[in-house]
Image 1 (cartoon, rainbow, N blue to C red):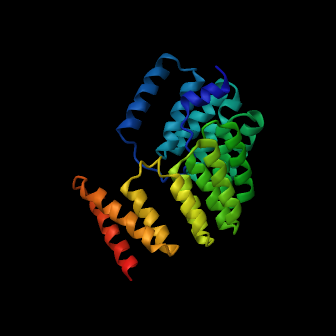
Image 2: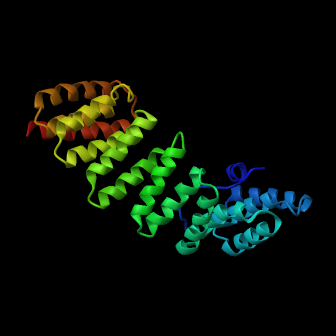
Image 3: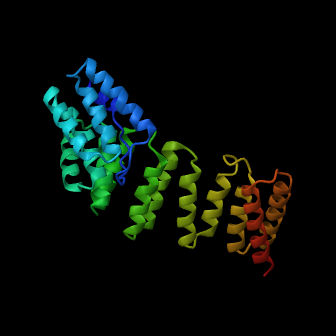
Length: 270
């Protein structure tokens, strides 16, 4: 089995540091199944990688480290680096996690998950230049990147006082993934912050079909129109949104939108 396929099949690759927690039934079932498999195949490297990753997820770091050490004895050590780095990141040992992540991307330069993981280590270590470079490599290697990673890159750029570069990254995501409201809304916020309300309204209009002309879309547009001083257009769209909401069944979400519509009406009448 190739290292790339091995990692895809057996590892949890989400690079999010977590506070150690007790195993929930899902983890307990996983550990039980792996233990049973190891009883039949005690020299299977992949099983130790899998169990070490589960132990890392639940904060049992000593057990995880023992399993990764055993995995290194049973097969090529390069198959262990990414899984162990993810565990060390969860543990909060950024230096050790980075050392293994560096070795992994050097060994597997076409593995997008290695660059994604290393980007999060670099971000948490305050090395935004490294993180942004790794995310760009991930975007190039991964056909369908997570939209949230474009947002993460944009947030780092905003934090560095580079809002125009942040906007460019969001547009890069929109070009690669198509109309993703999460990305477009972030871009709209940047346009508004820069005082470019016409551009923000144009971006909002571009989401109309994707969001099926929903009441929420209408209210978001009313807000932008009101900020741009286009009260007549805002009032017309607000009435449409209120009629649309009145025809919907009563839910907490509908009531929240109705409350927002009331606030927008008050702002427009002021």
